[in-house]
Amino acid sequence: MTTAPANLLAARRLLLDNLNIDPDTSRDDDLEPGEVGIVGDPAHRGGYHCGSDRVVTNDYSVVESTRDSTGLTLYASALDVGIFEVRSGGRTHNLPTFSTWCVAQCVANTPDSRDLREIIYSPDGKVVRRWDRLGRRSSGDDSHLYHTHFSYFRDSTKANRDQQPLFRRYLTTIGLLEDDDMTPEEHNWLQTVHRNLTVLDGRNPVGQIYTRMALGEDHTDPAFVVQHPTLKSLGAQLTALQTALTALANKDFTDEAAIVQGVLAGLTPEKIAAAIPPTIAKQVADELARRMVA
Image (spheres, rainbow, N blue to C red):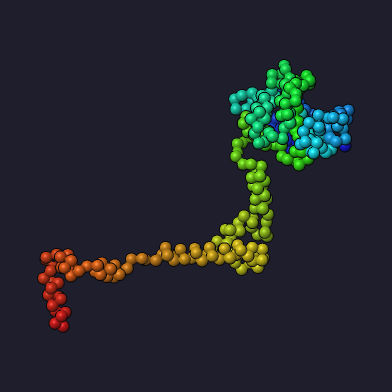
């Protein structure tokens, strides 16, 4: 039977988490769970709200694109979003402004909108329009005065491709989410790093391994050696380097005798004689004569 795919459920959750301002009450300006739908009701036949068990002959949601015909499964491939209104960044945002923003992204062919086949919406609550990537249709029925319909190419739901980035970007643009430049892949990487750093190795968080290496804690830990032989070797090298740097920092590099010898080696007798002040020249000559006699 037709079911909701995980990627559209995640997109639905993102919208509800940020546009249902007060989940404990029913308010006209809140986006309620019943207003964000994926699977059509049991009587629904044909279209993107239906999976392979409910499509009809020559169903437009299957036959007009190979992305749909090759991606047909039991998954529904559409999302309806109902009326809401929020204040953010000193402005009011609602279903018409949300819908026109999403359509603008599709027109611009942004990477996070390319799985959208169509959007049926109202820009003002008075007329219904349809943006169709395939250019087949331009209108819809009056129910779309009160909700916006997003159709996704079926191959994207079959592949479980993430459909949150477009909506996350909208929520960021209007100021309901903090801005960041990370891609979904980077977010997943960060989550993996965070998960690994919070796993305990019996004493301290794994994230402290590098600190422990610098302190030399793990160099004799058999379990650590087995699990992290490369890190152990690196830790020993870091410790040795630290010891050498400390020794260099404490060393007196001033060698006066060597400096004098170096200076004298570059002087001729004439230069030496010229450099001696006249007041002590006789004393130097007397001392040299004395040494020669001795």
